[in-house]
Length: 132
Image 1 (cartoon, helix red, strand yellow):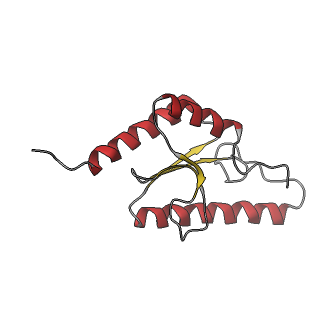
Image 2 (cartoon, helix red, strand yellow):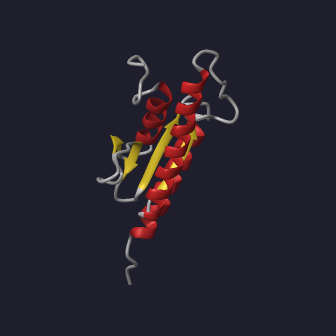
């Protein structure tokens, strides 16, 4: 388990590089809410956008998840708990006024980066006061 990365995975780093190239700045592996003991892969605090790039195995991807062959009960329960925690995190952030973007590790990085940039820009425009 020590060898399994919880941050700085290859899909995360690629998406971060693409988003950074578009001029957006963000926090990496940060808590969107200080009292919530969960970290998002990318956090855009002023825009209130939290981005998660989920691994297919650990978060139960409907396309790529393959149940384990050994110690099935433990690992299947772990993935189910991860999925439940993900839903809970989404709900808590939404209640606090955040937009949550979740991507699977197999999704095209360019498309993910474009969706992130579009959402952050949209939220920034909504937050700006109208000038006369």
